[in-house]
Image 1 (cartoon, rainbow, N blue to C red):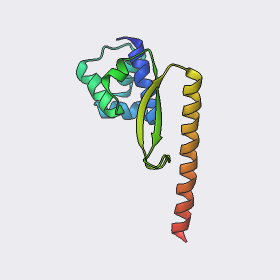
Image 2: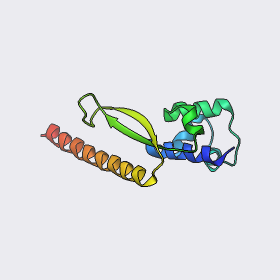
Image 3: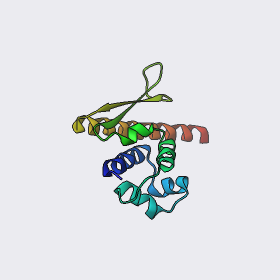
Length: 124
């Protein structure tokens, strides 16, 4: 298997926040077997690649494409970031990729703070 496919799978898995254990469970294999997929040391069947794409909610072609890095933009109709949908697009600039992923992490932190605040209100 081309190692870039394994790297793409790993990047998408990490973006989703999934562990290797979770992926292995979803695929019906053990974690060490799944790790070999990401390392590129095992051959993928078409069926297995299809199942991985389903779990990661990406197209198979996205996992096969090694020339571009995935970037995800989450918005809704109002342009806000809460309760939105994800649009996939691709960019080759690693610096921009890292900044966008950092923004995603900051957004998650803010949303977690809001959830915590709302839970405290409900407890009163």
